Image 1 (cartoon, helix red, strand yellow):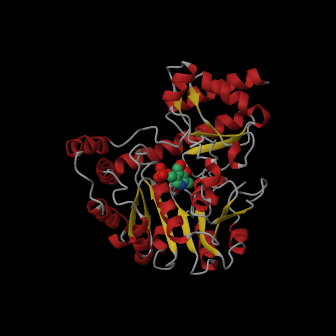
Image 2 (image 1 turned 90 degrees about the vertical axis):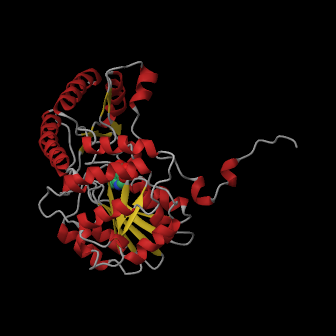
Image 3 (image 1 turned 90 degrees about the horizontal axis):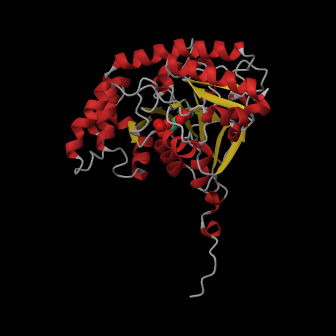
Length: 379
Ligand SMILES: Cc1ncc(COP(=O)(O)O)c(C=O)c1O
């Protein structure tokens, strides 16, 4: 056969053709390879700077001898622990390979050609990816203006108005990444009251434990009875420090969980991941320590950034997003050379903005020192 160049993009399903791959924070090994820097701090992926709970590490080590066995495909033990933790029946829980996986399951089960998902501008990047991959249409609702109390945050009024007969899923990130903005209990409740029962309302609470510190921050997991169409997603990647293990879950009506489980890969949550998550869930001290560190260090970081005259968005998460304007690319490059990995978020429709994860006190000091040096150079 004559070897004609093949246009694989043409062969792909329409929704995939226009997609750009998710851009993760630069891995430390990549910086080491590309820049030859050895002493690196990574403040780019909203990971827990304290690492995982020691109990989770031990659990993974204990599970290593059974690596030849498939995991429990139903995640019985982990689901039982989560059910007790949330005070819900295990039938309401769907486990995922990270909460990203659960978001993809929602799209697989409820979206498709001719169907629409609604989400905010500057919302988490996975919503458009799972929507388009499912062949559905993404309806992006303009965010709140920069002068509001939650600049670039979700405009729930506008989002409710954007739901129509074709809409099957609406995504609310609370708090949102990369903005850090959040919606309070009254606003979220009023919004969910307006979501028609045939629209699945996903409330993505990946940063819940950090955000729960805010006055009036809603715990949507308590509203499952009130809103049968509600899906709450949670993650073990953030406060539990298990991003590398990949565990997340959804809480929903059992009927929704049944559908999500139909499209779930049989062993999507590995045995070490389940063991780690189970141990992490039991280590409440580690969670409390992680939340306390974040509270203290986020305030410090914000103070330092503001002292430099930088505009910082409000944040209920373990990260801050600030505006570097035209100097952003140069400053980021300088930070990389200094061994500090942060996350420019221009690709979220926030040109010139940089997101930094709240690290340990030492990491944050090093970041601020490096940033000050870069700013002086860029000026
Ligand atoms: C808002 C939000 N949702 C979901 C996720 C997915 O997290 P994971 O798949 O690691 O659970 C993230 C990760 O950064 C996030 O920021």
